[in-house]
Image (cartoon, rainbow over all chains, first blue to last red; front, side, top):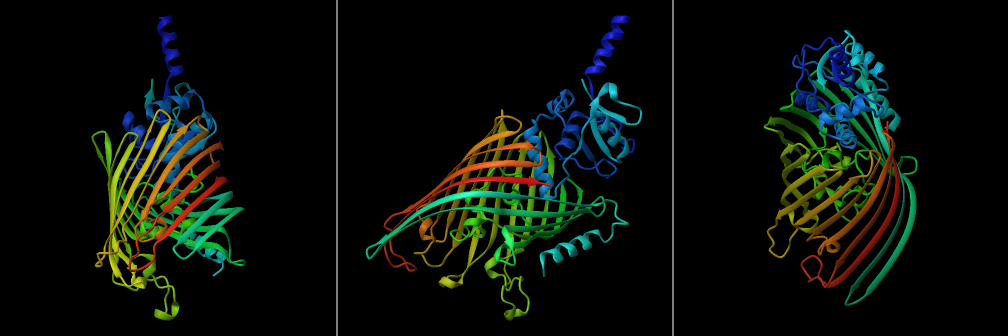
Length: 132
Length: 377
């Protein structure tokens, strides 16, 4: 029993949660949809409301793990986001300096999506996808 | 009108309905400041004379500064204004130029259908839409047909459509990728646009019944993007007695990234329907850039360009241009760039034709070292 609890706790510690503001009607997302949102191919939720994307400013394990499922490195993503931003085709993700700030901003912004370590998730946001 | 007035009016127009708008007015932009040292040597010789000239100069300049105003009018509509100042713009000193580059409104209901109306930069190949976005580009001196500073030598508007007034475009998800399409319409080329108020009382309007029609189709498969583009319009050659010549631009583009390497390349062919069999106005251009990201913040690249213009004597046998460059991003919003370029053009014993009835040789070499800082704010 103790072993199961320890394994479960360790797993939660290593998981990254893609989180969304409570206003979002979607309750879960596929990895393809997360990829499309972070590469700005998808900019609206199913109900037509705008997706506001948040990204961690500093490079840490949480960010690395998200980028891994996106299949792009930071240079490729930066280039992609700048192109969208400077052609008026989309808005580059907004920066959050810490995971706490990420949580606060996603909680406070309608239609927002972000990511943080699973153990920092609170009931104030919805978990849309889990990176194991 | 002074630039400050223009910016104020634009801000006022875009922010006029702030109280009722769903989204705020976004104001952002960028500028690029550079230092360049250029050395040019040119030799022109004919049976009658030989002229050799050489010059070198160095200069600091604010190569470009752009201010964007964007407002999401509602969830489907976005308004966009792009104001561009070039070459250390100063109306007091007659330096540089100030341009309204874009002023459009976009309707977007879904990825598959976007409609833009207003002054816009059309989708043609990969680079056209972003040729002036200096924080995005690794270059200081861009691939030749996208480099406005050499417009005295080459009219870049002959190779690429610079403006349009309406564009329908979108992306359709297909198995494992996206199909992109775009179709646009605009005025005929700039040479047809009225720049003398005495003629019709209004400058900046097309005085012909021609239009430019264009399109692009392409695919994005993971990190590979490719497409084919084309335009139909007229080339104003009335000054040399050829009239309004039908012109067709065909372009292809390919971009990909793999293991830290990136490749971008384009080919453009410009064909003309000229009645005289002895005269050709056709042109072609291609470039390829191989880049590498050494780290998240440090990149380097090499570029090869080739341009050929049957009607421009200096470019009849082709102009080759080689670039080597590198850059560093100390922070996300700042890029420090360095670039070396070599341009060579050599034309030997051109046969006489109706326009230039004399054989002659031309040899041009230019070298340039540039340093620049591009700031995105």
